[in-house]
Image 1 (cartoon, one colour):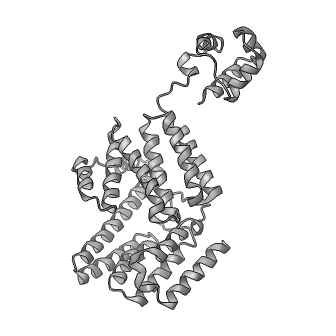
Image 2 (cartoon, rainbow, N blue to C red; image 1 turned 135 degrees about the vertical axis):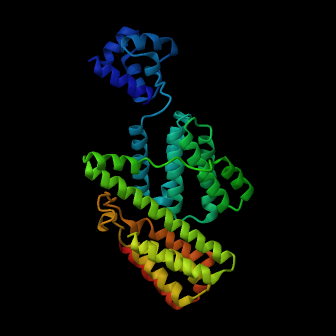
Image 3 (tube, rainbow, N blue to C red; image 1 turned 45 degrees about the vertical axis):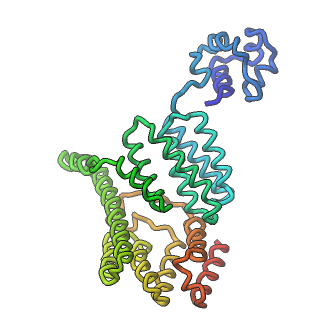
Length: 359
């Protein structure tokens, strides 16, 4: 909380006027007004007297708070979301970064906030339509924030940042740096407490709705992990030239996603890798059309009985967030190059662009 806000709120708590504060400290009323508006700050020689007058600890008066609360961090994230909502993921990026940099200057040791900001920046870059060159400075900024978290005393945050750094370096082709990060990770992660918590509720026959929610969240997390593993295994087999094996795994990935109620997007992504690797025009366009169709509505976990206890993020407009970066990838990414001479592919992109503009 800024010093100006602390002075104003403490003064009001005590029922004092700006005139009374000014009189007791021997300063002018406009000077106190400027303190409370943040235009100027009290002289350092007045701080002790001001703290006594406001019945505040000097550290409180100087906002000496090592870390913001979870509620404050959530508030910061809401402010960032509002900026992005008003200006879009590409145009609002610079303003969002200025806001996050300012908060990190205020709380340079708050690892949880810095890690949250790094993840937020990563997510914003995914949603933006910036070119790879335009994204690069922001990607470097996110990397610097993840590295900053490596100094944290919170082991969980350190491990999560190491994981993100390893992933980023792999994407950038910096494999030695990636291996250094991987070597920092523990061989085994700690057990998930959710199944135990759910079992306790079931055995006591209390909070059964909570138990069901915990189990569903664990299932969803596991299902998403499984889908990611099968997707990577598909890509590994493609890279190794084992196309028949890759095709079988991709088919299993699609069926598993369907059985586990993950929605059409996740049933398509592994089979699309096969179609692209084979440069199968017809199948690639069919799967791309299916993916684009999923972007026009929000996947609701609660629509599946496996996840009906999980509250979905209603009110979002995925066509305005997921679709633009997906369309940009289809237009720019080398893996889709063989499709760009196809009239059906171009017509599909044009149709989706028009539809996205209308929404």
